[in-house]
Image 1 (cartoon, rainbow, N blue to C red):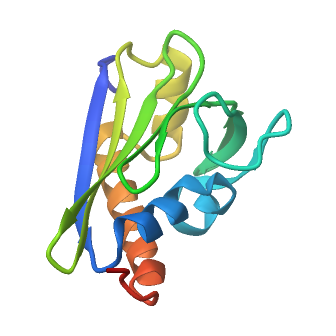
Image 2 (cartoon, one colour):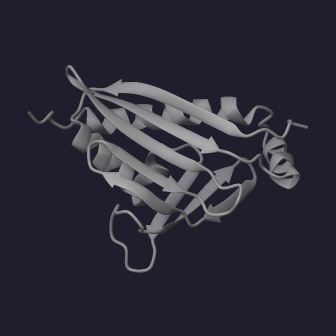
Image 3 (cartoon, rainbow, N blue to C red):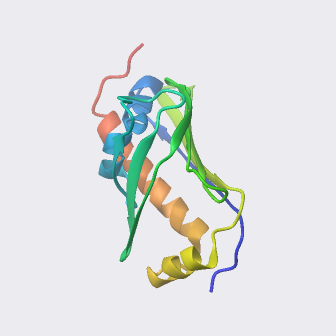
Length: 160
């Protein structure tokens, strides 16, 4: 069984698009299911219609035969610079996207931090889904997410 450890994982990719274009794609949580191998979709809650600090959404996820949902709260929404949300609960993760302008585009970093380890049942379900190294699995999924976002973003013109 995988060892109970806190997680801190990040992946960085340069995307040939403006920080605002990439931010808009990643902060539209209703489209995350188009990019993420694990997230299957999201809906805004309580009248929220877009990314702003304090807005909540319900995200649905699937890993192998396991599916679940969470109701994160947006904790940072600085267009073109930083987007962040926190999953509730003492073992909830914080997901952060940072956008740093570089020549010809933006360096995007997707990070996930979970300060307290997942409970045994969650680790058991991950293993049942074939995931023996959650950090490695997250890195691969994050890289896929950013690759898919890049494919969309790079079809749009870079603003000056």
